[in-house]
Image (cartoon, rainbow, N blue to C red; front, side):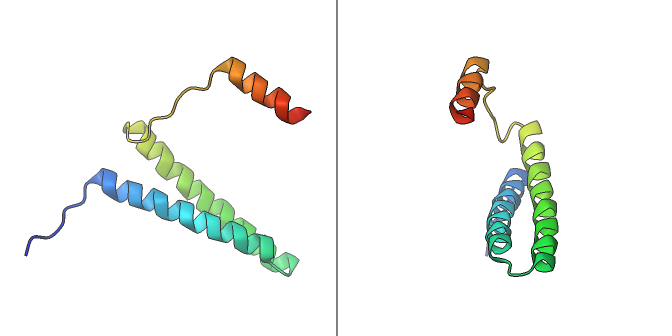
Length: 85
């Protein structure tokens, strides 16, 4: 039987998608926490998970696997002005 082969890109993409899933659920859990102590703990974990997600994103981006557009300065200014009102 032939074993499936996963590339580094496949593995990192899977890890990034997993982190997005994890942070989404920790965020919901933090919103529902009934005590300040529990919420604080969950928020600390959530921050750590977001840091992991960002590290994975940066790794993919540095390898050209997650291209992002540079935002047009005028569009950024327009969006900022729109939401500051």
